[in-house]
Length: 404
Image (cartoon, rainbow, N blue to C red; front, side):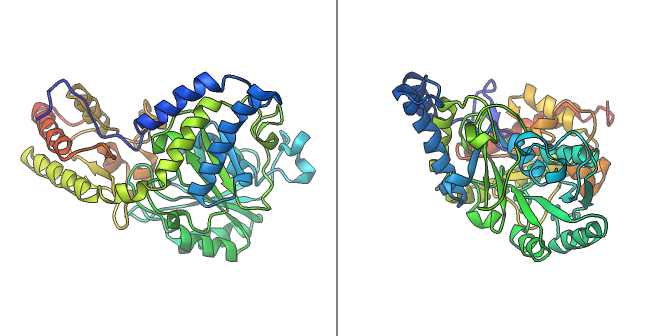
């Protein structure tokens, strides 16, 4: 059994611990690639090599061409760049193709269970004249391709649909979305499909984002560094930059690039090629965790209920705990040395229940939810000890009234 003071990390969907090989590569790059990668002299070219190695590694991982991979500051910027590229047509575009501050045109179709970097970007576009058609999920957490098709048809009566955005894997429930089926419907209607694959790349095979025209990736979800990600696009798609500045990343993402982060991203992306098999092997451990938590929940008088059914990523479980608040359970578990979350890490600190689970199952179920996500370093001993600590927390909180 672990010492009571040790932390059991069960929040791999929030971020993954950087792999030792990644850290070693970054240390070496910090010593060798200190120059500005945009400089044309020798030191600059050495720094630039790390940028291009990351681009090539991401291309191989996602199945795109390296020349069509734009490095970003992470998944959020990649998602924003993907959504904003479709709007601000030539009549309303400003310098360098950047949408002007006025009204935009066209329609966007997006599900209600996307990551905040997608939903809030969609809300921003709606405020500037883009018609946004929202797709409700099924209670299982799946977004049906037929529902996407119906939303496209409704939106097309208002404005031409330029883009559909759909996750590959939901960040809270781990539910795998039917991307290939959605892609067929989207393309048959003449639109493009953006897939937020941040939670899928390196965890599922490339079939998880098959048919996507644009794919977002974040390094820190595949045991790489924070602060770097990528947007991969199909040839022929003309992106519009979110920022104005220099010519880095073909003018799409101006600003001095970080060769140290790129070195870590390259190593993480190469490792991630073999990671889907390692994650698939975690499914029995995830199932063991669910069984242990269900048992301790019943012993405490309130059986947890799983949120998300059907095809799921093999390392995630999301459970609602009737009678308790999810955020309070997370705080209590943190004091016991168990690191979990009650929603997207990007939404931490908000008082509202998860928008994802609210859309799926309602606010009451959402308010009591806790997400557990395991990873390559999680052991059976971790799972058993975590369940023991959960039981201890429930025992301590059992006498408290709900919401106290």
